[in-house]
Amino acid sequence: MIMDVVNTIEICQPDDWHLHVRDGDVLPDLIAHTAQQFARAIIMPNLKPPVTTAELALAYKQRILNARPSENSVGSSFEPLMVLYLTDMTTAEHVKNAKQAGVVGFKLYPAGATTNSDAGVTDLAKCSAALAEMERCGMPLLVHGEVTHADIDIFDREAVFIDQVLEPLRKTHPGLKVIFEHITTKQAAHYVRDADTSRLGAIGATITPQHLLYNRNAIFSGGVRPHYYCLPILKREEHRVALVEVAISGNPRFFLGTDSAPHAKGTKENACGCAGCYTAWHAMPLYAEVFDAAGALDRLEGFASYFGADFYGLPRNTGKLKLKRQQQSIPESFPMGGSTVVPLRAGEMLAWTIVG
Ligand code: DOR
Ligand code: ZN
Image: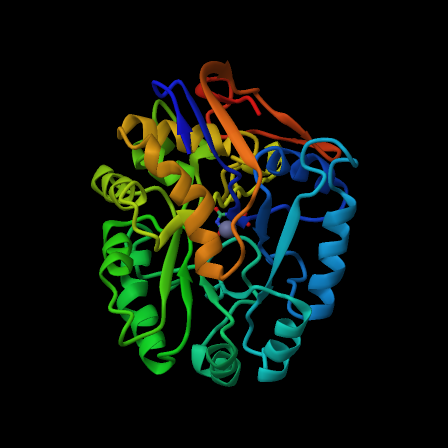
């Protein structure tokens, strides 16, 4: 990594290990933003209907490839990495086919946890054959770590998930490689940091820019701010601080996953607004801001460009990405197919700009 007086940083090109790009006519607009910065991204399978088989994933992958920026322009070689949606019906055979098709993981959405999760898992015991096969063939499980019972407070759902679901799951399947997605709490950060992987399978975690930058006050500052609402929801300041601490620690269990989750403006600015923050356009400047504020710009490259690839057993990228300390404003919205999407911190400033 080359650094001058920290006004410019050049890092190995990063990857986004957790991304939503939806489907259909919105794909070109969304992929263009991600492909400006990231060489690869794990594409979440929570479409309607969900991406549950290798065949569906390969077809979806092709639609994404077709939507990439045109040849010879930036981002034309962007590579989508496909993940399948785990359901009560997923079998060992599905896992074997997925492995053969180059699928990189399965995603566990507890039923009802978030956007398009109705088909999610109601009882992990129903997936035991699939999970055993995943253990056997080294297929990672990506986990949306929240319990869904209505009697558990929304701010406690992640911490409760660790005790009630994650730890028992890892004990039942000690060979399972798990990625705790978009962690939001001190409990999750410390669970992953302190996990004894000589006893149980490897564990990693992705962290979003919004959970590193904001606490739950952002959702309510001066009025309800739907573009700061995502799931798992933003938490108290002490949790944000714990997330920054592990993200900048250089611990390879923690890596970048934006969870950029676009929704049309009208479905967020709504009496029952959708969950999701759109960060694909400015993800790397946002992360740079976090690492800069913590005096840890030298740790950004590991978090953004190395640890995820290493965890998934994929080669690190060979390209570079350059960021400059140069202010720019974030547009109020972007075109998204026939609609528009409002980015996180719309209309405000960014301290960093991608320059190459
Ligand atoms: O805020 C979120 N939005 N959290 C999720 O888990 C799903 C995502 C989406 O797909 O919109
Ligand atoms: Zn997500």
